Image 1 (cartoon, rainbow, N blue to C red):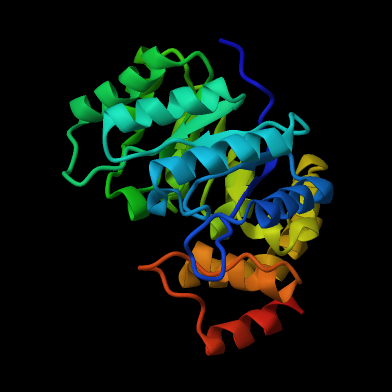
Image 2 (image 1 turned 90 degrees about the vertical axis):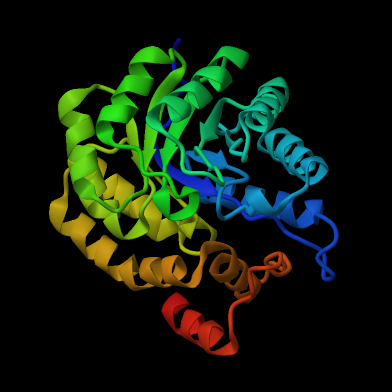
Length: 290
């Protein structure tokens, strides 16, 4: 299976809600996608942690998925997160995303019960058997409760043909070094404060919600890395690091939505149980955005 060219800054979208939180605001979603693409990001990733995919009904998920793919319109690749609590539901989402034109689907092994390695492998195999597009394996124990070892990831890559890329979000840079040493799989950084180290370790791209707020700094960092300009890359990274740390600590839906509001795009609040950013947090965010 040939991979689409996924590289660089992969922008994660929010899911905007109406003021009462009861419906999806597709107009705001469209404007947020246009802003990301116009800024120069290299791919768009809807319905991940930033997009509150876990808090949407099936009908809402379908609406956001189909609309996002249609709005991106192949201007850049679209990577749709299809993770769900059961294999059957994840398969349904993967098939839906593929049918509507997703270039890649991303799979986090989310589960209520702690999964064994055999169960995780079977989960990826079932999804892989059901679709023809590539799968980005997503390792993020902070949200899934499941930490996949490098050894398990390599087993999945070997046994599931269309798992062809890895997003690593544990915050352990050694995982990326091990992936680089033990395979030729493209891997992507999902931990904002590790962006510079991840690129140095060989990451093909950076999956991040930060381009919603500071796209040029993110893109300039990537260009400095490509140019092998370490001094410039360091300077650009440390300029944005306080904001990267803030949005991670404050929670991506709350901080990114508050930041978009500050930049003139109203996208509503996160869906409960997640609270919007506090007034103190908003003031801190204003300072960081300056």
